[in-house]
Figure 1 (cartoon, rainbow, N blue to C red):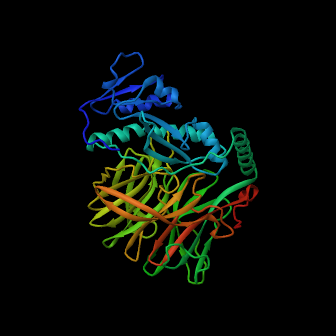
Figure 2: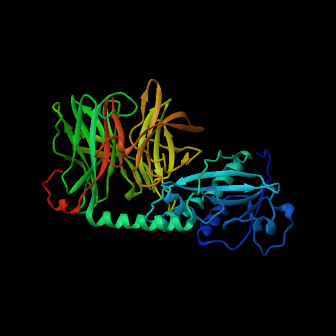
Figure 3: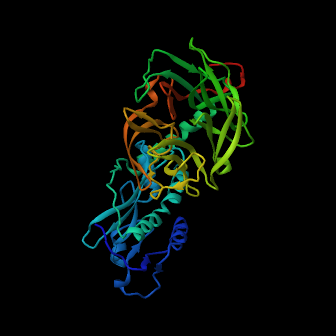
Length: 470
């Protein structure tokens, strides 16, 4: 159902005392022009109300008490159900699912339409933290829907991705306890380490036994992640994040690949007093450029190579005052495009994809009108450079639905222009594509040279044997 005309002022009635997280949502709504709010204490004529907005748990008594606005009664759901977010999160975690959250509207005849749907990052051992992040995110849903409505006079509806609640509350509680116990045991006895696999091939997904392979296992006191391959003057390199467990601050390194399947030691490329990761590298003209993740500084910075691989000069700040993760650039259809994951305040950075476009990598960069173009932790956050295959553009993305960097999803770009964006997941690199890997969250390419990172657990005591490679 759409509305082709809307009044100059929107009248919204709030149904009840707002929960704490909704206060932020209301403050955002009040910034939208031509919106007026009523509360329970206000005496109003029902015909004046455009939207009845309910922030608490929905039941039939809400509509019986407050009725419906011209645009319906708006309310929130979790796991497609009228249950509280904590129960929904526990049920989803017990089923190893992402946490679904959505904004709906209901009409007097019982019809319901989904106005906005999102799937969030859900840590089974940290339910309360996951729910807090989800509530911080959904506070923005009414603003996004109403902003679009005021622009074109239509309320868009979402095709609903169904989620099942198959676990009883008691079973879900037990599953949460088990997840917490597993996490405690892991932290006590094991250390998380990322390593890198590189190979050659032109298929959309890397094959497990290519003709030439490099296995890059870091020393036990650090990890290597976020690999990006490049060939410079006939020499093959892997750029990566290196992070020492002793200070937990990443910097960027370059590792040369040799024809016999071996590799050099890691050479520092770029380091600073803040965390750096995701060394997205690309060529433009006759120069090499680098866009590392620097979300700790709340900016996106472009660096130019003076001498490869260890001399870089900052040439432009592409985005400022923004916590953006894994900025990934591509030149396509007469524009430069930037894909990056951005978090609303207090929300997870793994869930929402934003797109920007410019005439050159130097900017200025314009935000896409559909931002965020995707709100789905299962395949939003960038996971490597975009690539062409048989004339079609593909985008790797992380699956962070139930754990960070769980798998890599390949999305086919169906539309990419200044007015619209859409993509379709077409392939998936699951972590078990190798027997020594339990997660994988980056897949990058340079022509037929590809690189993937993998995640494993190593005994915690091995971290102290700094010269050991496991």
